[in-house]
Amino acid sequence: MKIGILGGTFNPPHIGHLILAQTAKDVLRLDKVLFIPTNTPPHKKTRLIDAKKRFKMVKLAVKDCPYFQVLDWEIKRGGISYTIDTLQQLKAEYPGADLFMIIGSDLANTFHTWRDYRKIQALSRVVVARRKSNPLKNSRGFIALDIINIEITSSLVRKIIKKGLSARYLLSKKVFDYIRRNKLYV
Picture (spheres, rainbow, N blue to C red):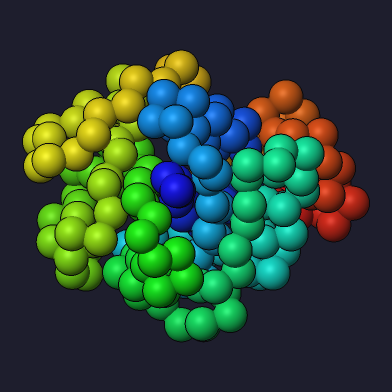
């Protein structure tokens, strides 16, 4: 079994995340892609909304796709979320599976600062989605993945919502409705 892993804050999850997951699934012929929202990220200082709300939004975003799944492991674990801990748990849960950790080139450029980054590479293949806005500086044994270049970020979505503008077509309809109903990011 080939499993993709897409972790992140998903603050909020947007169509760029879905495009990335679908592209990785198709190009790498993955059986499924696991979305794993972080509890507290070790590298980001962004103010996050409640982890349970971010988890709910990711569930809404992928609800209609049978090969996308959302895991709340990092949220349940609490504290700072380290990729190595999640990969070790995944290896125990799916023995024999080939794991493909999917990250953007922005994260790949600082990958050497991650906790146990060499162990991460030993447990999984690291797939890097190349972004024009943040070119990959060093391949470090990564699998490069070309994706449709849509420069959407969660911070951009938050800024648009904060300004009172509509982010409707940057988010799935269910996530957009959830954000509006719960008055998130205003």
